[in-house]
Image 1 (cartoon, rainbow, N blue to C red):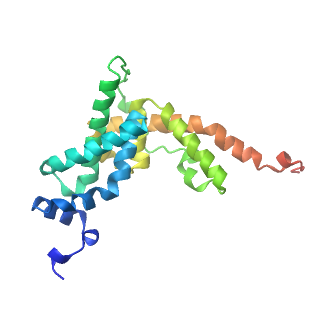
Image 2: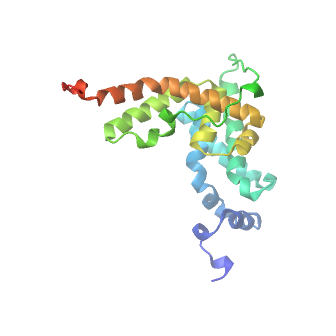
Length: 216
């Protein structure tokens, strides 16, 4: 089988990019399909509105297609795509809220604790065992994310949801690595604070004396 006959889904990302640049524009959908959800979630993290996030996601894909030649490293396509999504979402937010300004404190390198991950949040995907518990937790996490200031919500989504590296996140947001670490630490602390009551309640609900039995 020749490279020309190879099915798109069997190709690597670098191969897809090369063939798209060579003129096979129809392969662009195969290239972006794995990232459609990531782009939407990133836009939603900024805008907190499903309709706006959907529009920004579409605009992001169109802009990526139009400016594909500007991609400097084919192995960094996801980070580049999310960088476009962040910029498009911020542009939409500024247009919609020209009268609102959010104060951003300068992050101090001396307060960095970028490797900190509260256990209560680190293992949240594995904790619920029942569908209702999982649904409750999902709703609680959504509320907690919405409560974060924009700069912390963006960091949290890129690092802990999209799993970008610190370096990639810094590039997407055009900030320093130390700022990424500091903001992520603060975002995680705020998420832990918001989610703590839920985890505390789930733990106490399972204690024997809560069911009328003497634990001793």
